Every structure is written in C-alpha cells, then in structure tokens.
Image (cartoon, rainbow, N blue to C red; front, side):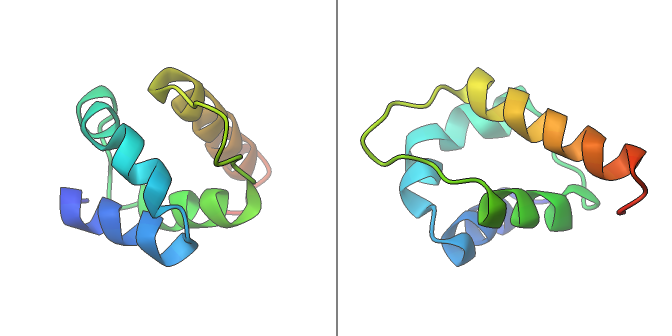
Amino acid sequence: MTEYELEDIFHESGHYHLYEQLKYKLWIAYQWLEADRNILSEFLNIYDFDHNEELYCKEFLFHYKIFKNIKKKNAFY
C-alpha cells in the first residue's frame, strides 16, 4: 500500500486529523501491505478516537494489530 492510499483510507473514514497527527510515524513504523487496506478501513470505521486525547503511534498500532489478529484468527478475512 502506498502512502497516498494510507492517507485516503484515513480521509474516507473521517479520521484525517488522526492521519495528520501520526502520518510519518505510521508510515515508518509499520510495513503496510495491500492486504491491510480492508482491515485498516474497517478498524477506523469501528473504533472511536477522541479528538481531544493525544494518541501515540505505538498505541494506535497496538490496537490495530490486535484488531487485525482477531479478524484473521476468527476467519473474517
């Protein structure tokens, strides 16, 4: 997945503010695969992120990885 595709997913889900806050760290800290596109999109649509609370990249990735593993282990993807 390209950096622009990652940005589009955040924008489509209404969490562009989150992308702006974490974009460089997210891009560097995690190897985004094409298969992650649907999982990330669903993750962003299901989880609620408080605009007033600071969210760290590691914390975001921790929750994302848990969500991804649950989806895969339960054969939803």
